[in-house]
Length: 55
Image (cartoon, rainbow, N blue to C red; front, side):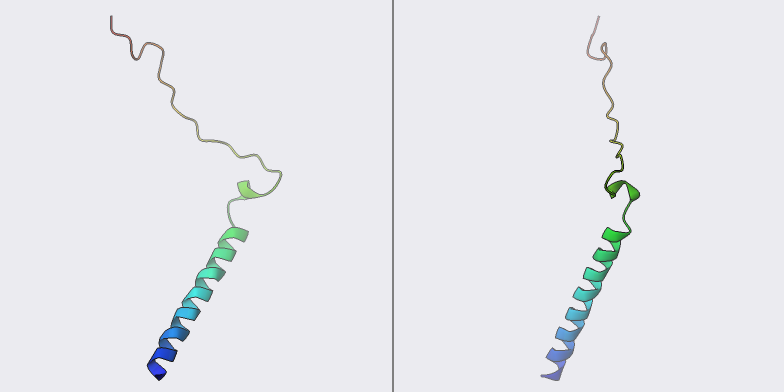
């Protein structure tokens, strides 16, 4: 019975640690996620006009 208590306590501790890491990650995330900042979107490559032409 005491083994089950230790296993449950370990799982609860790991869940708390995961929540803490998630909270820290959210608070210290990239500066682009702050309100009022401008995010730069990834540029997509656009095929050239003659890429599909075969002459």
